[in-house]
Each structure stands twice: as C-alpha cells, then as structure tokens.
Image 1 (cartoon, rainbow, N blue to C red):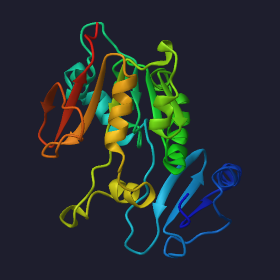
Image 2 (image 1 turned 135 degrees about the horizontal axis):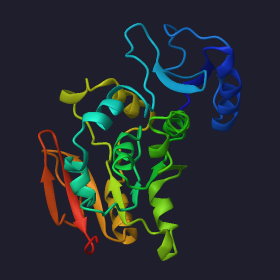
Image 3 (image 1 turned 120 degrees about the vertical axis):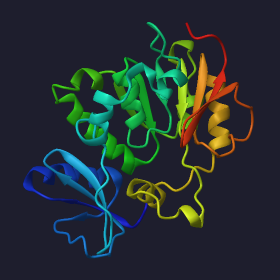
Image 4 (image 1 turned 90 degrees about the horizontal axis):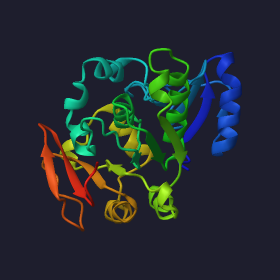
Length: 262
C-alpha cells in the first residue's frame, strides 16, 4: 500500500465510510484536509456515498473516480455505437451471443461497463486496493440509479491479483468464456503528460511489468478467447502471437482464439 495516500471525508455523510475504509486499507485518516498541502501525494476522499482520488498541490488535476452514471460513460452508453463498437467485436458479441467476460485489469471499469451495457456478465478483477475502493463506490451508485441499475446487476467485483485469481480457478464452471486484458503500457518521457487518470494510475499502481505472465495465465484459463487492448503502434505482449487484430485510430485489440465462440 502506498505510504503517501491518506483517507479523509468531505462531509458528515462520508465520515463513517472514511473511517472504515482507512481501517480496511491501513491508511492514515485525516479529520481535516487542504488540497494545497502536499504532505500526502493523494487523498482518498469520501463524501455522501461517493469516493474520489485527488492529487494534492496547487497545480494538481481534478479528482479521479469510477462513475457509471454520468459523464463520458453515460454518453457512450447512449451514443457509443452499441454492438458495432470494436470492443464488442473483439470479445465476440454477435447475434444472440453474449459471452461471460472476466476483465482482469479493471481499472475504473469503463470497458467492463460497456460490455455489461451490451448484455455481457462481467467479472471485474482489480489488484490495487485503492482503485478497487473507487470501483466499489461507483458500482454501488450504479446499483441505486434507475437508469443503469439493471446493467450494474451484470457486473461483479473482486480485489485480487489477477494472475493468482486466474490460477485459482479450478472447476470448469469457473472458467471465464472470454478474458479481457488492458495492461498499463509503460510510458516514455515524451508521453509523461498524459491525461489525469493515467497520471494517477501510474502514481498509485505503476506500470504493469507482468503482462506476459498475465497473458499466459489468461490463455490457460479462458474457455474461448483472450482479448488484449493495446495502443495502436505498441508491440504485442511477449509470448504467443495473437490469432488476429482489430485496429482503430489510437488503439487495437489483439485476439487470441482458443475455440469457436457460439
């Protein structure tokens, strides 16, 4: 657990959540905070049933949170292209086929939500306890919102190391039909000024240095296919070559087929 993160609360409604979250995560609890104070690099702020991660400092970007109700996610749900989206084709959505998907690099859950919106049951696996706390809050809010509550019922969440979680799946009934992987791509100096969420992720989670091991574990456990999202010009993950690729303007999907998805 990073030592430069503290938990705090912005109102009385968030106080109990902050206290229990600080205890669960083993992080300091602040009864008062100032975003200009850089004693802690990040603050996990609880407020009226929500949680957000906020960098400190005078020039810090805005907060990061898992939001399945409003903003960009809501716009994509309404106008994102439905089954015509590249991610839908990548996981094998076609006709009446809606595979059960394990998103083993859940992040803020946006791709998981898109797949759940399209009718897939999605198991989100996130190894960072901090990011998991954000996902937990976002999922709870979605479950209480009448517009997306039915979508949220198709989403589940676990805080676990994905490689350990995958290798622990013993029974055939537990095997995901499709495993979705979107590893953090190591950045260069040229791309250091990425959007705020990626900056926060790199501070809290760091780069994924075990992508090859994760891909291997996914190939051992997926029933039908493994889908890996990559920057368009990035190399494939080391190891087995993908069966085929779907290319977009800025990203692509490497698809590893194991057997026909019907």
